[in-house]
Image (cartoon, rainbow, N blue to C red; front, side, top):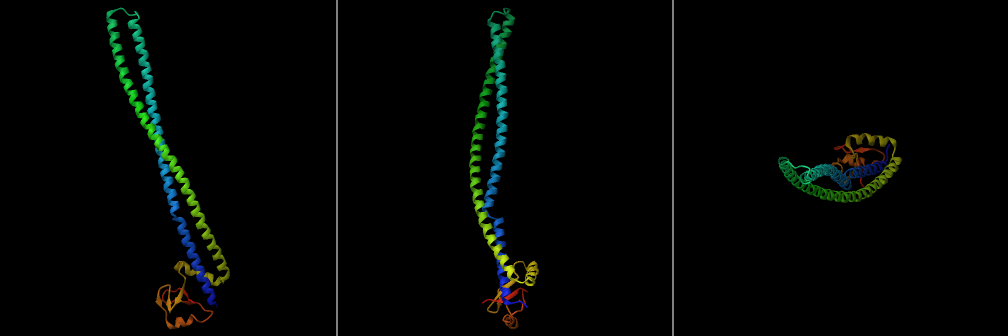
Amino acid sequence: MKKISDIMLLWDLQETEKNMNKINKQYKSRTSLKDVEEARALLDGIERSLKALEEELNAQRKVLRRLELKGEEIAEDIQETNKQLYGGEVTATKELVQMEKKLKLLSEENGKLEDMVIQQMEKIEKKEKELLGKRSQEKETQESLKELEEKDRQESRKLKGRYRKHKVSKEQLEAKITSELLEKYAYLKKKAGFNVVAKVKGGVCLGCQVSLSSSTIGSLYTPGILITCENCGRLIFQQE
């Protein structure tokens, strides 16, 4: 035979487990964790952008270097042509005319190349500014992430602390309840979740809000027996 006090202890156990379940849900869906995840995703995107920018910048620098090397080649060619043209090495009129044409073409090519170099340098400068801005954004996001992670750690510790307190209470309550009643509670909980035990107030089961029969209400005052609601099947006891 079970005592009414056992049912009340079972009620306390049920409420404790409800609180534990609620805290567990809060822990999994805590806003601070979502903020951290969003910041990490943002930082990951920034780092990918940085990598792409660095690759683009390196590629543009290689283009600039090729243009500069080409310019050096043309400058040497112009110097050599000038030497031949005005150094007295060539005296034939036809050859002199050809060399003048060559020098003109080289000068035009060199001018175009210088424009290309300037344009490429401008592209690189623009990309460097973009990279600098992205690195600044990365640093700010990293600092923000650290703050959010610390906030989440604090929130996590708080929730874990509350959970541990309820867990201790649960263990203490289970130690006071008979194994037979705990087994029945566990069996009913598989069907009803955390809604196994309900209080009765004013002749009404507070679990389903249905009025109980007079015979059921009378049984509530009989010591040592388990009473269930005739409507919802919960274990019930009279609220004092």
